[in-house]
Image (cartoon, rainbow, N blue to C red; front, side):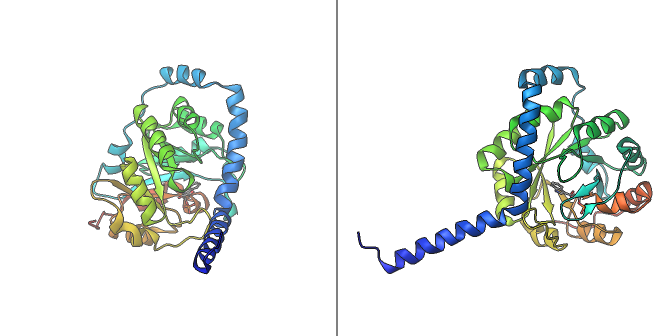
Length: 289
Ligand SMILES: O=P(O)(O)OC[C@@H](O)[C@@H](O)c1c[nH]c2ccccc12
C-alpha cells in the first residue's frame, strides 16, 4: 500500500498528540493509580452489599444545594487538608473535628474532607471524625473512579461528592452523578476547561466547580474561574476552587459570578480558620453571570 506523504504526516502528528496527552495526564493519573490500589484493599474488606446495608442506617444526606445558595453572600466550602502534591506538608491537623468545628463556627456552608491517603494524607477516619463533629453538609474529597466510592461516601455520611471531569469518561461521569443523586447526595462536578464544562453540563451537573489548579500539571492560574465564567450555564451553582489566598481573591470570584469558593491552604495555614471563614463568607455576590 502506498501511503501519501500527507497521511504519514497526519499519523505522526496523531501519535505525537497521543504521547503528549499521556504525558500531560501526569500527576492526576499517578494519583489515580494509587487510589485504585487502595480501593482494591477496601473492596476486599467491605462488599458493596455491606455498604448498601450501612447506607440504610445513616441519616439522609443534607441539602447541599440549599446550603450553597442560602444567602446573597458567597458561601465557603472549607477544606481539611494536611498536605498536597503541589505544596507538600501544609498543616499537621491533629484534630480534624476541632478544625471543622472552627469552620462551622465561622459560618462555612460545607466542610470538605480530603480522604486520599498517599498524596494528601487524608483518610476516611478523618471524614468520620468530622462527620461526628459537625451537622453541616460534608464533601468527601477524593478521586472518584468507580461507583463503589460513591456508595462508600454515602455509607460514611457524605452529603456531597467530588467528580473530577478530567478523571472520568462521559459514561462514568453520568453514571456516578446519577448514582450520587439517587442516594440523595449532591455532586460537585469539577472542571478546568470549556470542553470539560460542556461535558459536565451534558452529564446533568447542577453544581459545577472550576478548579483554578490544573490537576495534570498542578499549575494554578488564578484567572481561570473568571476566564471560564461565561461558559457556566445560568441556573447551575458555581464554585471557584483553589488558590484563594485572601479576601481579595474571594471578592474577585464573587464579581465573576461565583456562588461559592472552595478553600484549603489559606485556612489550614492562616492560624485563624474561624475568622477567615467568617471574613470570606461576608463577601457579597456582586457578579451576574
Ligand atoms: O488549598 P487550596 O489551593 O485552597 O485548594 C483547595 C481545593 O480547591 C483543592 O484541594 C482541590 C480542588 N480540587 C481538588 C481535587 C482533588 C484534590 C484536591 C483538590
